[in-house]
Length: 398
View (cartoon, rainbow, N blue to C red):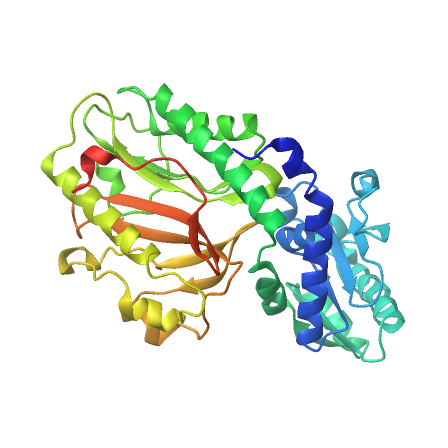
């Protein structure tokens, strides 16, 4: 596990790197400035956080980022102290909300006031009446356009900026994934037949916080017949001896890193049966084959064409994608299965500095159990490096 002191010392370098990536991406997109509402993008561009989950569904903070001037952070009233001393933030102002919860019948008025303040900033940082926004409600969009501003989508620029990690970011990710592995071990040590799925998930979440993490983003831990099909949420079902337990961590860990790992094992002391070993072995084979395809310059379509061929009886229940990017969240890129490419796949290739998660799910349609495995990896010029050291079940492979 990386030394916490040295990793924490990377924080200022990481903030400067990320802000520079955002500005370079905005320039490439032909934008002089952008307003960011997504809490993940705000954190990436400024290095600040405030009520991350609550702010995902309440308009309480946003950031104005210009390519040639200081960042203006608009934060929830009374919380300006949280960002003081963060060198990537130039000034801090109170956020203005037009959301009906906060503004009521004055929502249109507040949206217009918000737009006027943003328009003044745009004028101060460029001659073009053009601004990027990563997400926006109807009222402020109308208000900006009424002031003659051309509003563009800033999400592509932010996604591309976030996709390439610095050496310091990778060290932070390794530290966060070490904490994730520790949380998995803590959960496993606590498991007993007769526990509920929700008890196991609570142990995982608590351990994540103990090891410096922040919160749980999904509830994907299931057992027995609830492991097939995948994407069933954790319940109060009692787990029985000899059943499969399958989970996807989806933990926001230390440094805000999204730690995304999937593992599966048999509950209790019962040895895995033949079907469980077969499902696990196939999922592991798929995972390792596809990890082996990753390299700089490999196109997304090329990857899909050469991916491990899923046996026909498991194809209907395949996972949604082969690979997705990972950093502060699930992010660009995303590679779909070959049979889904015509509808969804976009062009692109893997690049040095990307961190991605490789996915596998094996479970027959209408089957009674399934196995999901997922592994995060870092892609460099020298090959790929696994980011999570939590082991696979050797007695279920082969």
